[in-house]
Length: 92
Image (cartoon, rainbow, N blue to C red):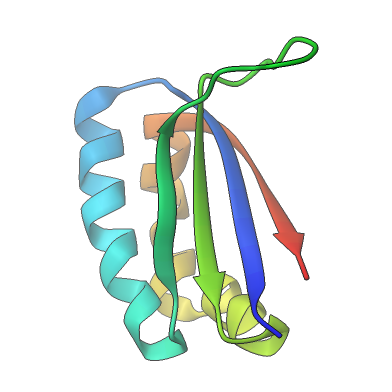
């Protein structure tokens, strides 16, 4: 069964976010990760504190966690923090 990482985010710095996004996309490949949705959200019920959402699909939970904890991805977190406010969620 595939596993999803769902990212809720508010952009903070467009240039830093663009840099982070390009670099983060490359780190997904060794773990079988792929973007399945990315963009602004429309809340159908209730209020969302976030403006955008990204959904990344992995073959399984172990690959999702291995990607997030990988050295290559962890090195990008300082850029991520400059580019956006976010929450990451793991969903099986």
